[in-house]
Length: 194
Image (cartoon, rainbow, N blue to C red):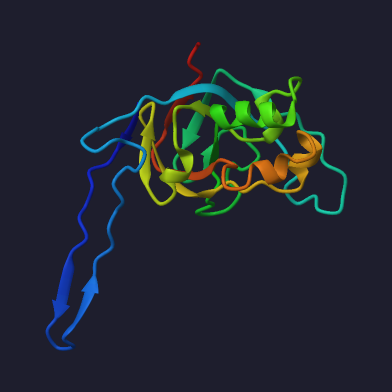
């Protein structure tokens, strides 16, 4: 279950000495839920890890040859990443401790580019999920299978997508390349059978 945290309202306060209003930050209401809903079912279809980088840091060089291994479950370590993955302990407060990608976007990409022989692993995202509006989670805290995350940024596609998947993949994925997130609590994510 993907569960939102309770919304906080924006509060206007006045500093009497300056007579200027200032605003306390508002934690956004979980944006991919209908008003009044308190959870959304998100299904994890694939989980991947890799011990090394194939594209990250390889600009102007050939891609690496580290396999992206599909696993039935993965350990999430708060503030550090996925145990066994290339970004585990990469750097403090790294915004991509885990990456999520939508299965629906992957299917649309395959249809648009007429590609039928590539698995989601070629996109090098950790968790392939169904029924989640990932861009709406940017700037929000959310929970999947009891593990809390903070959505940090879109996992923007780069020119390597055209090599790894097919020409045109980078353009197609603009604005829907997935979600980079920080891991806030320890736990285990597991693939759910179809």
